[in-house]
Each structure stands twice: as C-alpha cells, then as structure tokens.
Length: 88
Image 1 (cartoon, rainbow, N blue to C red):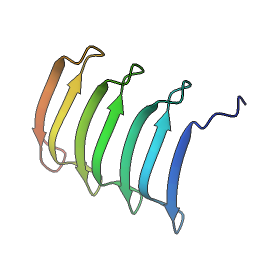
Image 2: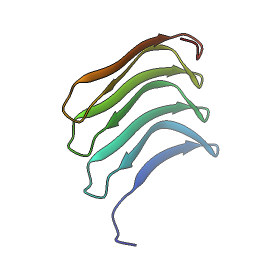
Image 3: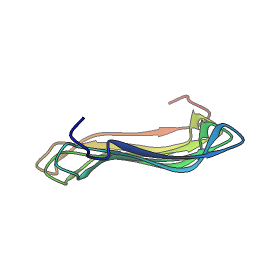
C-alpha cells in the first residue's frame, strides 16, 4: 500500500521467464533470480539490507548446480559448497 515496488517478475506463457527481482522496503535489491520455464535457471543472488551480498548460487532446470556461498552482513564468508543436481 505504500506504492513501492516489492517484486518484478517476467512471464512468458504464464510461466516465470527471465529475471525476477525482490526489493527491501528501502528500494535496494533483496534477491535477483533467473527463470526458464518457471524453474530457477542461472545465477541466484541475495543481498543483505546494507547492500552486501548475502548468498550466491547457480541453478539448472530448478536444481542447484555449482558453487553456493553465503556471507554475513559484514562480508565474511560463512558457507561454501558445490552442488550437482541438488546434491552436495
């Protein structure tokens, strides 16, 4: 009700397609995801409200694939793991 954009999503044939962004109330990006045929596909980024990266990972056809990392609001790496087809 405050008129601020909370989320932007692209659709193709009623399925999420392309970039999807979610925003904090202050307007900064909270999450940025890529979709293909309504499944996560590509880089998935999340941010802390202070703008620091909170997490980064990669998806292929809705499954975790590649390096996933998480950081504290101060930029300290606290998690790192490799995934293939959703398995560590």
